[in-house]
Length: 119
Image 1 (cartoon, rainbow, N blue to C red):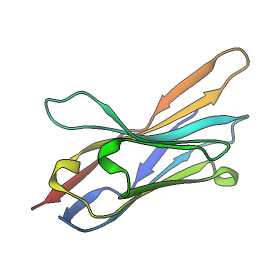
Image 2: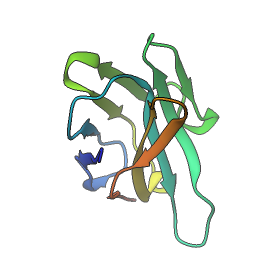
Image 3: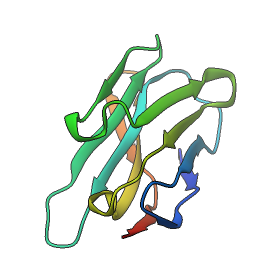
Image 4: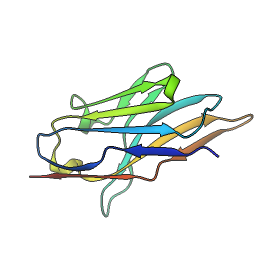
């Protein structure tokens, strides 16, 4: 089965940067979209950023201008460059991919990586 392996989380001071990566463990027929959601303690999981196979991006309002998502289709890998990090960005970040199957599309999730931003 498809697995998403993500990395790049850590602890950083406010104003710093991190880069997350997420790679599918095997070649797939088609990845329609990839991105990240995040979940802070006691809060609902929320969209951070997504990118389609054609390069269309979508960002949460709270991260626009600070985060940039990109994709290397040949490597089945997405990257999230996070700049000007704020304490409110602290959360577990989950990679997401929507992958086309024969009939249905399937949603896959990474294991999550902790991002902690200190003030």
